[in-house]
Length: 251
Image 1: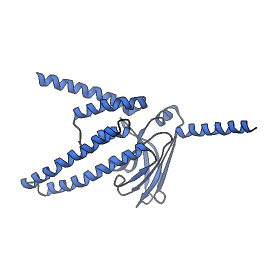
Image 2: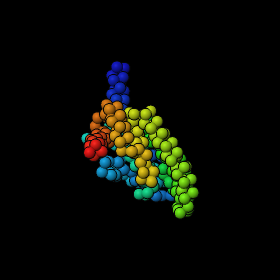
Image 3: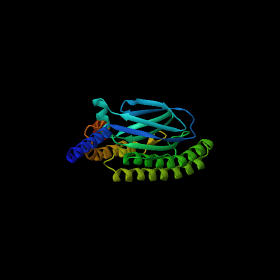
Image 4: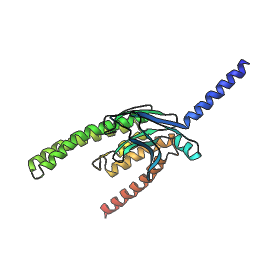
């Protein structure tokens, strides 16, 4: 009888683990929130694919994503980027896969500013990237205001350049170090394409080298991840561009 009971408990535990692999929970608390509508989408190469929406209740939200179809289970089996939206210009991106319970605390007035996240290593890493970019943007925004105010003053423009160039190099060094430390994380893919004011921190030829370095360790872990398939295409496109540029320079 004890053996039968043990086998029953074991089977229930295994079933629970399997169920968790097909389930993602993303929730948390938004301060300074009323009863706004909050939406959740996952990010594809073609844009956003909306999954669910709800009304905040006392700033609380919880999205319980249960994979039921085969395509949903395939998506849950690999790290995916999920975006939380209060509006089109007030969003926050995180990474989750089956079994993750992501908990976020943020300010509803500006989700990406100073938020706290826990629940998975990938989500925490994305939070670190956003935090570093916020620090950079705070200083860069002040210089931009100064530039606009003294647009015709050459001495001010020279001062701004002396400040901005080292700042950019410092942040790029941070991103480089981040990618080197986490070559097997999808968050490093985000780091590579991080930008400020629509300007990337890495040149195209640098992106190509990093994509090649990231591709192998990530492919081993997540051979069917859609972002890695996109990475493969980018490697091919950038390689062709680089070859064309070299031929052009030679001619």
